[in-house]
Length: 95
Image (cartoon, rainbow, N blue to C red; front, side, top):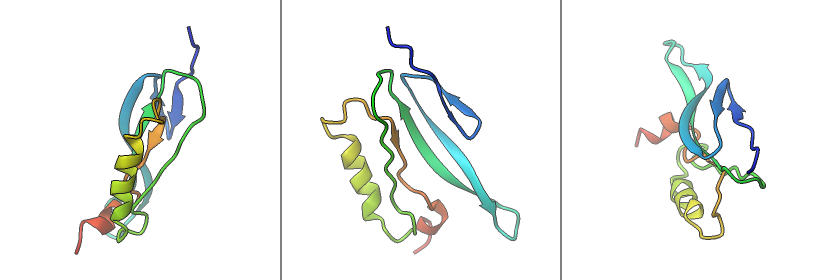
């Protein structure tokens, strides 16, 4: 049996074999509205390297979101550990 420790990300503990969505606080607007980075964490129950992918960092790079979806579905990634679809979510909300 593998003894994989839980991942600790911004005070959130993610147990092996689980997948969660967390928001990492970045800053706040002048209106005091919080700005966060949404992160989808898939913590494998198997040992091995970790993968971090991100897209839509500047908001106008919507192709990055689809690329990440496709990468996470690749058969070679039988045990994905992390995927972050949109890093700058507020900028994708406006045309």
